[in-house]
Each structure stands twice: as C-alpha cells, then as structure tokens.
Length: 373
Ligand SMILES: *Cc1c(COP(=O)(O)O)cnc(C)c1O
Image (cartoon, rainbow, N blue to C red; front, side):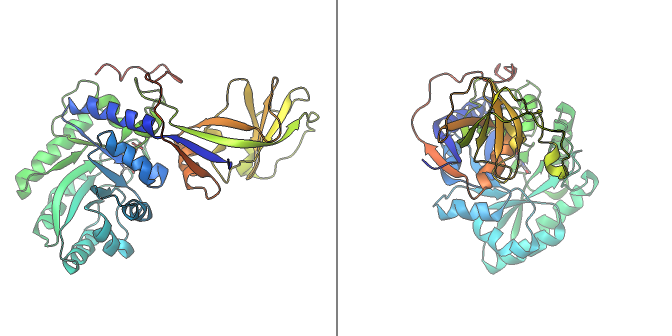
C-alpha cells in the first residue's frame, strides 16, 4: 500500500462527534462540524454529520467546493471572511458566511440579488482573541446596515477564541457575547438565530456547568477529529485521540557514527536537530519529511526518539528496532501535523470503515475533566 498515508477511522470520528453532540445537547448547544483541517474531505465531513453535527463550516471556498462536488447538501457556512474576489461563489456554495467588513457584506448582497437568493450573515465580534472581529461598540450599527440591506439576512453573531491569542474563553466572555446578542436584537429587531460561542477551546466552558445564556452553537474541528482540548492538549473523556494515523515507510536502517560538531546553516531546520546522534542506537530513516507534515507534531512510538528531519527524510533512533527496509511505522499527529499532512499532495488518505473497539481508550493526558456531563 502506498506511503506516506493517513489512515482514517471514520467510526472513531463519528463516535467523537456523537459524544460531544450528546453532551452539548443537554446544554442547548448545537454542533457545527469544522472540516478545514481535513481540507473538506467529504467522507470525514459525513462522519461528523452522522454523529449529529447540524451543519458544516469551512474556512476555504476550495474545500466547500470539494464538499459540494461530492454531493453534500447540508448547510455549509464559510467561517473565514469571504474575499471580495470570491463573493459570487460564496453565494453559490454557502448558505451563510461569517463577516466583519461592510464592504464585503455589500458585495455579497449584490451577488445574492444577481442570483435571486438571500445569503445569511453572521457577524464575527472581537472578544479578545485579536484576530478577526467587529469591535463590540460597532456591532449595533453594522447589524443595522445588514438588516436594512436587501439580498442578505442577519442570521446571528459569533466570536472566536484561542486562535491567535491562545486564551480560552471564560464564563464572563460568554455572558458578554450573550448580552451583545440581546442588545443587537433590541436595537435592530430580528431574532438572532445563531449565537456561536467559538471553537473547540470553548468545550471546557460549555461542559463546565456555567449558564449558557444565549450561546446555541459551537464550531468544532479539533475536538471531534483528535479528541483533545486544544488549549490543554488533554484527551476529552470518552473520545478517541487516534482516529488519524500517519504511516511512513522505512528506507534505511543501521547505525551511523557519532556526529562531528556540525554547523547548521538553515535556521528553519535547526530546531529539528533535537537529539545528538549516538553511535550506539539504530538509526531509521523514513520517506516522509517537512514537506508532508509538521514533524514536530508527530508523537514518536514508545522506544523511539526523533533525531531530526529535512524536507523529505525523517530520522528516528531506537535501541530495539525490528524495522527493516520496506516496513512501516505509525505516528499519531497533533492538529498542525494533521492539517499539513491532509493538504500534502504526496500523502494519500486511506479510509477505514470498520467499527472501532467499544471503549475509547485513554492514550494521552489525564484529561477526563470533560467527561462529567
Ligand atoms: C478553525 C476555526 C474553528 C474550529 O476550530 P477548532 O479548534 O478546530 O475547533 C472555528 N471557528 C473559526 C472561525 C475557525 O477559524
């Protein structure tokens, strides 16, 4: 079978989605499945929907097109502000989009009128992450302009946390977003259908027993795909952390002499020379590299250590290898490794459709703190 490849356990993704959907349902919060880390892979998106996600969200139009071309008819929301050059396609492929710029919303409205449809607008509010968002003080006036604009409808508001800033939202943030929803309704009239609290980093809040107020949606990617809380890195209780595995092939084994002191000239790869080479252990070279994944986001199997990597080679060391040339090694990936591998042209995706073992096993972290609900 060709390598490098990503093996995907669809049933584990379905299980993860179902687990988080059921826990959030008791809190009145729906789940929108975010597929950007898997480039809008249709079967993986379908596993999220089968687990109970009410719709999908994507950052890139090319991924939305991939989902639509595969015949997916569910609601898809664009979560990155549309580019002006893509407004016509956004109207064609997406029911709604997150927006922060009135210029873009005006262009979306014009495109919607040309296509004789109505496009949903969710206004992204800046709540401290300092990435995209309308400042809360400006929200009322932007919302009013959307309400008054033909071709678009104000569908809701949302916020995003822990992306650029890395700080998880707390109960006060979520109350502030709820207050903004109430104020916007008071000011402009229409009921806000969606109040989207954020991404996977919101799960500790959402499952922590705080009042959810107006929050009725979370946009979840990493939690469903990797079963971890992105801020702590801990496993979410009852979820699989091994739905994805990177498989690479051994192309050389043997020992190498201890290295001479060497000068490393490329600062990008300098950080990857983690372990001084030892003359004793076996060195294994695999046909996978920085061009295929984020090597630092791979977890080494027990007994193996990362020696280094270049664009096309991964070098690992071990004292007890039974690996021979042509054999395969498996690695778990973090979000960055997964995202890079899924978008790398040389990494194939192999879907495993069989059922998984009945219990999600704890394979990393102690984090069962989210299991209580
Ligand atoms: C990527 C992204 C998400 C999903 O984030 P996860 O951490 O994968 O859950 C949600 N909302 C926006 C705006 C995003 O860019």
